[in-house]
Image (cartoon, rainbow, N blue to C red; front, side):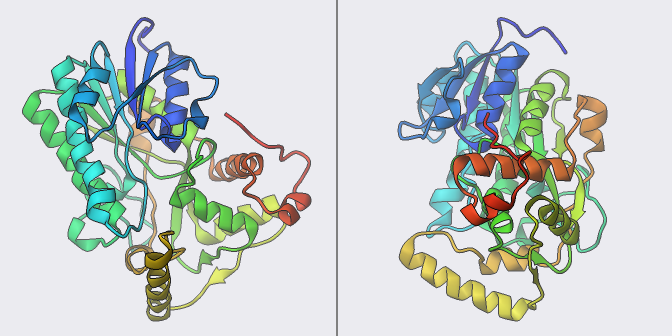
Length: 353
């Protein structure tokens, strides 16, 4: 990798799951890091890290431009990772699309040499069969209902369109299901892991998922800053696992195999509708929504990360290691029930960043 000592990198969303790991990975690579966070952000994930913290908002172009001044690389990792909201247009879509456009425009104004954009495997799509998809595939936004999926599809398009219009060197990374340490806000993917480990969440009877450690995703961003080809997107994921294989890993770690969800689409959709009604009253996201059922039930969320391996040198941990690291992180943050924690092997000590 090129010598980046003396170069400055701006990380948006620096207190998020990808962000806190990315700040560390960039620092380890030799970058001086500027962390852009909102005034109200929880900064626990940045404790003890040598980083310049700047307050701002990706929806405030002036604060973005000010933070980008003097930076060589801009890692745009900020996004609202939610699968449900009372107001998805304002809370999920606007930060994704407008925030991404603002970040690329700020990079152009500041003369940043490269933007590495954190997209999502959701922009690739989901498969009805056990065939891994690649960067050549593109999700049709009309075919999906989850607001986060729609937002990431639209944001990726905005990123490339804005970069092309302004002549910005941009590379997109498309992480799969991100787990592992650093998720202080508990994103939907980690929330499902909490349920699996605590025995409260089931696995689906069919379909599968691809899991990746947030630390590997962060290192892939740093690799992309120096090795990625302009205008390209790179899937960064780990093993493709059936839900049965996920259950096997969880059982090996906790001594208890998750239940298998065998209900059909209609009853699950009805349950999702009831949970959404409750969520509108409480403001807390539902454990299951109609959109999640429509998009994900019995689908294979499988991907081929061969391009990132070949061109970036990306080397992800295997699926079992990802789940193990996630469990150790959740042990340290108090999200694992005491009765479950007592059953765990003495080797499963809490993990911190």
